[in-house]
Each structure stands twice: as C-alpha cells, then as structure tokens.
Image (cartoon, rainbow, N blue to C red; front, top):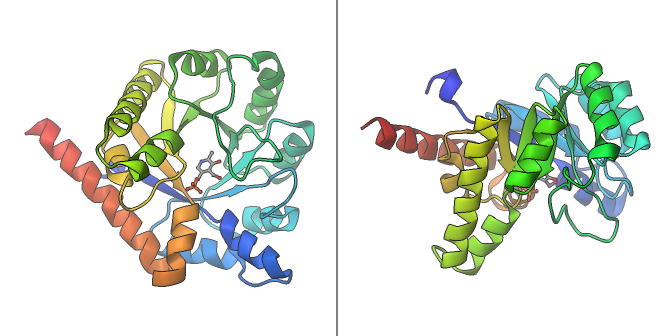
Length: 258
Ligand code: PXP
C-alpha cells in the first residue's frame, strides 16, 4: 500500500507502566515495549502522563522523548503543569485529553466547545513550540467546529462508545449508530481541513470498520495490545493489528474504486 494511503498506528504503552508500577522497580520497561512496537510496524508511540502518575512517569517521558526514533505523541491534560513538561521535552505531538482523577480511563472527549478560553492559550503555546496539537473529542459537529476555532491541526475521535456497543452486540443498532457518528465526524473533520485520528477501546475485532474510514489517518491503540501481548507477545500482537488495519483499509479503498 502506498505511504499516502497507509493508515498510521500509534501504539500506546501506558499499561506496560501499569504492570511495572504494580511492583515498583523497572520491569517491564515501557521503553523496551516502544522499541518492540517500532520493529513490529508501529508508526508512533503514544504515552499519557496522567496527573496522578498512575502509569507513565516523568522519567518515562524523558526517556521516550530522548531515546526512541519514532514520533512521540504525549497525551496530556490541559494544565500548566503538563504544558511545562511538554515544552521541556518537545514531543512530536501532544493530544489534549480530559482528565478526572476518579476515572479508570479517559471516559469522554474533551469539551473543546465549552473549554475554548482555557484551551486556546495552551493550544497556541504548544503550536508555537512546534508541537502538533490534537484534541481528543467526541465525533460531534459542535466539538469539531470548536477544534477548528482553536486552530488545532488534528482531532482524535473517541471510539470508546462504538467499541463498547460492538462488545455488547456485534452489528447491533447501537454499533451502527456509533459507527455512523464516527463516519460523519471523520467526514466533517476532513471538510474543515482537520487531520483525523481515532482511538480508544479498539481491538482486533472492532478495528476494521474504523480503519476503513478513508479520512482517518492514524489510530492510537493501547490497552488491548498490551493485554493481548500477555498471550501472544507484543511483537506478534502489533503485527497482527497492523495487518488487520491494513487489510480493512485496502478492502475499503478497493471497493470504492471498483
Ligand atoms: N487515544 C487517547 C486520546 C486515549 O486517551 C487513549 C487511552 O489512553 C487511547 C487513544 C487508547 O485507548 P485504549 O488504551 O483503549 O486502546
């Protein structure tokens, strides 16, 4: 597949750190996971430095920024503390995410519309430092319009609701409705000139229909890959995800040009 049509895979390594932190110490090392993911076909490494440091640590970010060859996508809350860290390490990209301490994972999208005044200076300062800013939002026209107003070049559409619906009842009405929202969101992002990424909750089974959306250029996947790696190893898990995404993308492109 040509590079232009190739869907990028960002491997999120947060939960390697979750396992390490269960015991303290250094094993398993997220940096080692990043290197294995790179060799297996990842196009980027994603890590979320949470305010409570429950998985990735400041030291992990420092090492990832310094030592890996792939672009680093730092997921971060829109706070002064995280902004200072991003400006210090200058990752390739920063994805602004909502963060609540009590949540187990990033449950909803960022309120780019309601949070404009708070977000605008953070987006501007990241952009001024040459960091590509993305906003993690629901596939909602108001949020997409707000991302455009904020001058963020990239949006990442939250696929969590789609993945949950898929798990509940594959091919059910809710799955199709969520897929339709994502399809419309991806189209609207492209119409607004925003680069469109997607992620959250993706697995081998549900990634295909997201990979088939032609406007989506990057998927960020973490929890499933790291969990599945326990059984199949990280190298083969990333390779299989890569192949599953590529196959779905090729089929979608083929059926459109046929
Ligand atoms: N994208 C963003 C912005 C996220 O916050 C997360 C979760 O950290 C992911 C993608 C990956 O989600 P998952 O770990 O469920 O694959």
